[in-house]
Length: 248
Length: 295
Image (cartoon, rainbow over all chains, first blue to last red):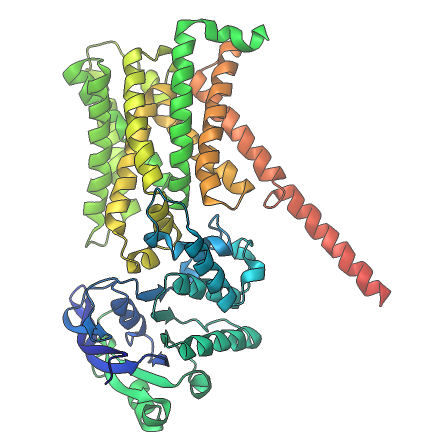
């Protein structure tokens, strides 16, 4: 595949010596929105966390733009599930987006004009500029999701890894999030989202990665999102720990 | 204005005032981190585990502040790191491990203190005695504040990332493990330096109340830290002053003043207070009823 892609080769990740992902390999081009699909415990979150550099790789490698990644990188932004975040944290929408710039600014320095402009642009891109002074608990679920996206943009990340961003969103919030994703995709960003609602996959995504402990299929929606592949993803449990009586 | 300044004409009160300002600010500032990291109960356990360290310090070095300081410091660090070790790779969770370790340590402290030949009162360590602050005690506090505060200020932004969402912070390449340990060490240092003023039991009040109060009032991380520091100074100095005029124990007065201020904020904070919230919901309710009746 071309240089502008994310390549995962032979990736194995274990929790306490019990593998959650086995020898997974696939490749996705930049400028696409990818759904990571699979049943519970299939390793969707594990894959995203491994790509974010949060988990150690037992085998295999991840390359981006032809460069092998080692651990965490600013080019990758990880967005946690909404329940994982303390929304009562004393900060505003703008405050969260500014966190994306923190590692670019030395601790004794104030934010430069450039940093301020990057934060403004990120807020603008997710249409949250009018709400920038709000405390973050006073937002809807979709808006909270967009705050983290803006933070990733302020960080100038190229790959966005989102854990279940559509979960619990109503239809209008889902639509506006979809628009933001589309816009980011057109700018050449790569979005990987774990997702569980199969109904709207063709509407929201252009590629899928089907997982069940191992890779079942990966490719464009037309190629890989087939009834046959889905049956294999959701019915076979070849490698899943459940079969071995192990809790993962 | 004599009634305001008269207490501070005495040398022991001047020393107590200096200790209040230092310890109040340090605790109030540190408290923001502790609250956001949800370490309040951990801090409580650690404060209790200072006691055996003090006992060993007294047994080995007598009442020299340096001996007490290092004794208390090492005991609390042992308990903190021991709990992490116990809970790592085991079924036992960290809070359980802490609970076991700190009660064992506290009991060991009580037993050890009964062997101490020097006449020291247990009450002195439990509830503090700010009027007995010596110049050496003050130097310990200056030293700790001079070390801990600049480090915390320098790490303010990475710490904010860690406190807000640890996994995102780690994905940005922040060494969260080191920051976590650093935070615990800073916490223990802060507590040890405040022992003389408020004692093992009341430490937590001085540490948490200022931050909790400011948290009720604003939505800014920086305001939480610096405001907590300022409120800690105010509460400590006011408590000291009251204790002088009322002839009451100083540590308890400080914590009572801070507790009263927290209650006010809890009830009256414009945005998050209980009473404005009730008033608002009733107001909205009536407004929506009125709107409905119009239709």
